[in-house]
Amino acid sequence: MTKTDALRRLQGQVDLIDSMKQQKRFSPEFRKWHRDTEIVVERIFGKDTRHGKDFTRVHYNLGAFNSVEA
Image: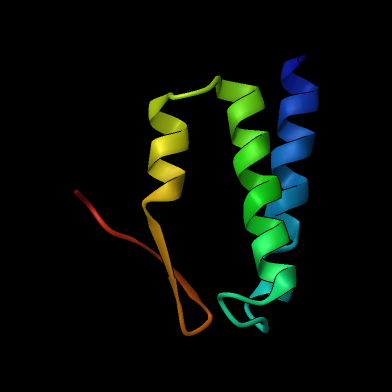
């Protein structure tokens, strides 16, 4: 994947964040966005990388995206 393709895919997921703030954490729309974003991160950075692990450690709460340090 080229750098341009990677940036385009990541930006596409970022662009959806505002609409995800209106979804409940376990709604089908949010779960699809989360799964799709995990796949994008995995395809760009590789499976079992720090980037993927960092993404899965982000906690989603009350319309805000918060990162929790381990």
